[in-house]
Image (cartoon, rainbow, N blue to C red):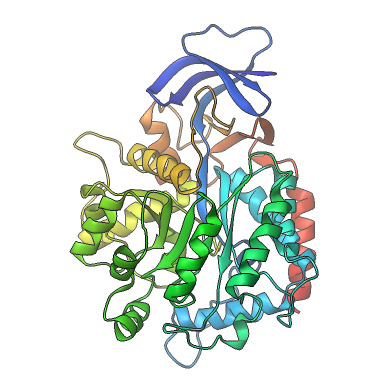
Length: 452
């Protein structure tokens, strides 16, 4: 049993003072506000729940910063994708484990306590299947266990190179499965995470580019009630190609042909009409927004103001992991809206309300829903995922309540997080994960080989 005492903590009911939290077997057993610290309590100043990065491609952390050299033609998502393919084709299972371990360490140091790993690097470098189809999934689970981050594994089904069942690209050979192969891969992936505390699994049909309609219908039952994630309408070219194939836009097609419901998460959904925004929000599904990656790849700006006005739910993900941070994603989300609308505090829930708190609350709820977590936050029964903020940081000095979240998201950049508990394990102290040095050494050795 662990007893923690916080001078101030963000509970589901709002901010409370002098909060004692008791942790047993990785979960929060008791939360008592107005409690005088006891002799055995570990004392901290400000506590908030950990957030989920609901969309991650862990292996891409290894190529962060390596695609910033412009070619002869216009540089777009589609040219970046070729760099990503070359990098993915070079990685061994050991490389994937090393890269993912550092990524998950960094996530924990920056306020993410659970990750939705949209995992499509399944096969060997020549496209041949490993003897154990769950080989790569096991390496993701290995990284999650080492770091203590909560894992929602989302094995991705990928069968085609573009709309209409087009043949796959040579660079995609490590991703490709038939429906039957994917069913076997799902079974192997379930086995890979079976011993990992707090882990769960869903499925991720990659996109309408990569999955034909009959395949989409065939694989959805493999989720077995778990979450379903799919990329949609990330790029304008994707929208144009989908229109040419089906006469409908990607989100429109999904809303009319797939059983979209609150179990689903549409990743990006950047390019939507007003009608699509309203219809998507009405399904109760989550928009998986990845503002830093969307900016990095030149995707565009999600219609967040309109989506929230329609009652939509969203969470955030770190996607390509070019930069990792819960506060960074939320800041980029709001700043994109400010640039688009030429206004300030666009996503605040109302006059006099904190923008940072609005963003945080949506990301906490949307991330939990998208990753099938029945309970999150500082409440009895929830997984003990807790982040404390460092009140000595200049951007947090003198702040209380929602102003501390605003200071973290909009002013602190780095160094605002002090300690992090993940599944009840104190893994970050003084802003540093206990595995940071070893994880960096393993990552650096792997990436030096890969870039050479």
